[in-house]
Image 1 (spheres, rainbow, N blue to C red):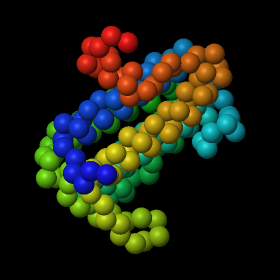
Image 2 (image 1 turned 90 degrees about the horizontal axis):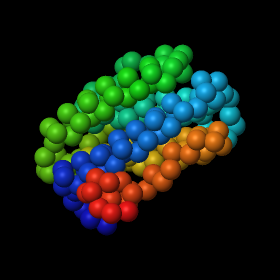
Image 3 (image 1 turned 60 degrees about the vertical axis):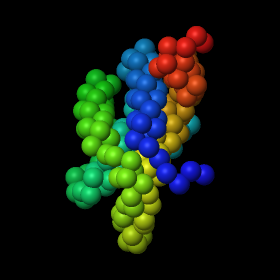
Image 4 (image 1 turned 90 degrees about the vertical axis):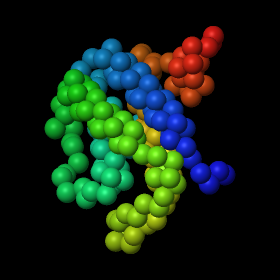
Length: 174
C-alpha cells in the first residue's frame, strides 16, 4: 500500500464521488415522492431518503473534523431535509465546501497526521488521506444501498463503477 497520496489523486477520487452522487440524485428524481420516503428494511437507514441524509451527514461531519472543527451542531434528520430538492441543495453546498477544502490542501497536508476523537473518547490518529478516502468509500456503500432501492423501484441509476466514470471524465470510448 502506498504510504503517500497526492492532491491530484484525491481530487480525482472526489470527482468520481460527486459524479456517482449526481447519478443517484438524478435517479431519485424519477421515483415517486412516496417511494423516496417509504420505510424499508432493506438498508440500515429508514428509507431511501434516510440513507442519503446519512451519507450527506457523514460527509459534512468528516469535513468539519478534518478541518479541525468540533461537530457541535446536530446531524441533519429526514425532517430537516423533507424533499429531494432540500437534500440536493444541502449536498451542493457541502460539495462546494469540500471542494474548497480539498483545493486548500497540498501533498504534505494529505500525508500529515489527523487526530480526532472517536465515540469511546479515545483519540485516533490517521494520515489525512486515509480519512478522505474513507469518506468516498463510505459514500460508495450508501450509494450502493440507494441504487438497490432505486432499482427495486424500477429506476436503476446504471453502472456506478470508477472505470465508467473515468471513461466519461477522460472522454474515452466506452
